[in-house]
Image 1: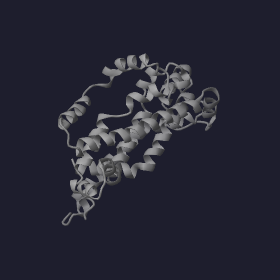
Image 2 (image 1 turned 120 degrees about the horizontal axis):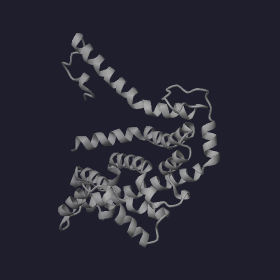
Image 3 (image 1 turned 45 degrees about the horizontal axis):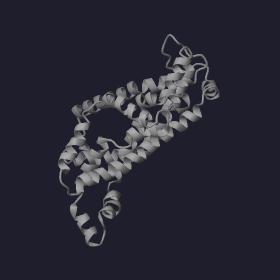
Image 4 (image 1 turned 180 degrees about the vertical axis):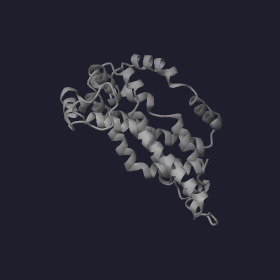
Length: 286
């Protein structure tokens, strides 16, 4: 099976045209990678500099030190903010995997009146900007007494239309004969979903899990609105408060930014194989 255009029979891998195209392609890719990496490199270089410049962008660290990180952890409750972010991102990801997979399976495999209209309703909610619903959701949670609580931060994000859409398309692409055979063997609908279809949806679940974890980890607006006490801040909101408190000390600000970014890079790199596999399968099945 051919794995790239280079593997197809008849593809000429010699001559000036081939080498010109290849050189230009690599130049664009390397140039783009360097360009997109510069902000992250500047963040790291500034965070490990003893006296970073405040009037210019220095690409090389000066007087290497970890003092900025030490000062940050000694003066701010970074551990509490880190725990809040893990609880927030982890809980939202777990709830989305459960509820989105159940809803996606029901819309793809169960036969009930109004199923297609309900699916269109889910898809249409993707067109509504999130800012429109912020105030009504906040008022509702305030009436429930959930402001500045974990349930208040987590509850509005426990299911997403994009996740339901992704898993519905994935379940719909699977052969119906699998479910029919399972039901002949005595499985009910939930057992058919849990034992037959769900294990086959691992690439799509991994893609949804990584996407949800990263977007929730970086979510700034909702935790800023619902958390009224600094003890409930997540790391992006905490970075905002650190920036206001130490706006002239760029080393501390960039140390806080590095603390936020490093965990999600580790999560993505450790699971990128599943993410790419899931995106590839979704693209092939339209």
